[in-house]
Length: 190
Picture 1: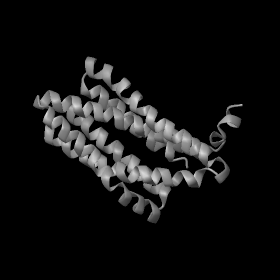
Picture 2: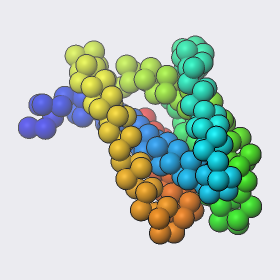
Picture 3: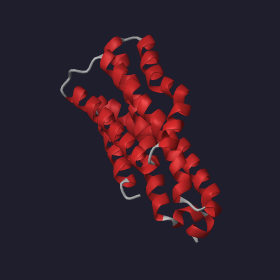
Picture 4: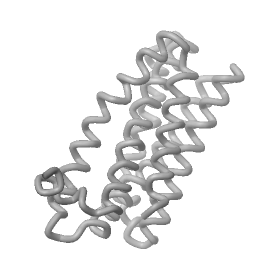
């Protein structure tokens, strides 16, 4: 019954891409909240929170360049590489926080790197969608992917908020790293 209403989920590669996208987006929003929290805690400055958020989001302004890369590269490999790099960024932040050597400039630098990687990952992910879903189910695949991307904007902070309040930024970064790892593992099957 579900497959009749959501025909894109019939396709194994779509399910892997969809799950990976959900985990990747959750990792992003968890990371953004963790970054804002730790930057404010370290600097006591909303200006630096804005700088770190801008560093993370500004590369999206050049996302069309990421689309050009996605058009010229093997999309499956590109999505895998970008998801692995995202895991590396979140793991680095987690380790910096665990060893209590994290500084505002480190968060800003990692946020910028994460933004650049995501500005390539998102177009590659979207382009790969057309390769894993047949044309008759593509509209449903696009709708499910879009709904998931928007829904994770609530899920990421929902996961990170209680962790920030109890165990600190290490917990938020750990969830973000785990989600990024799951995102990578999901697309390895495609």
